[in-house]
Image (cartoon, rainbow over the protein chains, first blue to last red):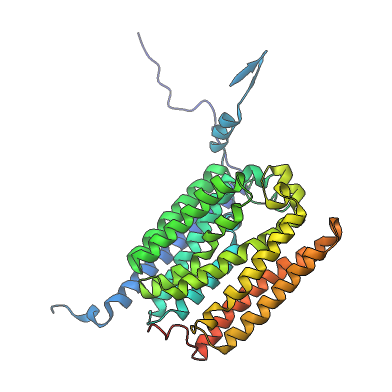
Length: 59
Length: 321
């Protein structure tokens, strides 16, 4: 018995419209900005909590 | 799936499953709308007051972080409320344009958004500021979503009385973030918002009674009638007026706050009394709308007075310092 494998999809699947692509991009940018802001927040709070001790390390 | 002759009809549950496979059309603005920004602004303001009037010193960066977490937590609760209440929202004119009933955001997207923000806000507040404040924030979100939205709202006319606790917690969270504890003063701030909520919300519901009835929500005007609602609005207004003045009466706030609280409380009772005496029917709507609008101003001015009082060196925060 031989099985014929075909890697090419027979149907195009879900094709996003230009508007859907635009909105997805806007959502992606918003998530990236939120994550960036979160990283900055954690960094700043760490500095605030450590205070002068941030310099207290073996040289 | 039910089969009728040669046509196949999807059940609502399956239709929702299929909808998840559709590409999302949600914009960034839709997700912001899910967070109920207007409610969030009042939450942030009352939390800020709780944070500022608390004794001790909190670094501004940590204060900002606490407020940000409270704001995001409130937004998460709003998103989860919209996810669960989408059926009610779709039949009420006031809420028909919200992202889910308008078809901009899928219910599953709102649920994922709300759960993610809730988890992030609570854990971040705990790790960076205070675990007590984080626990209170988690309880507030739970109370608003599960106790109020899922249970009380659809089952009892006392829904907004008990559910009002969720809106009353933010100043207590702010206080806990600053002090790491819960003081008598923060409980007073809680009580002010708790007793303020019924006259505020029932004044609005008087103007929307027919919509609540159509949506099957047992709001007080729907279940007990307009007359009883007006009576209870007056009752709670008479209660909140002296409670609003308690921080001054107990020596936690200065005279500026005391005068504002007494004048505002007297006006609130006067407007509630006017609504009580208003003729039946649509003619009473202006009185209800006036009371609703003033109630927002009353709470804002009351808490702003606490901030001013603090700036003037009022007793609030120094008593237990």
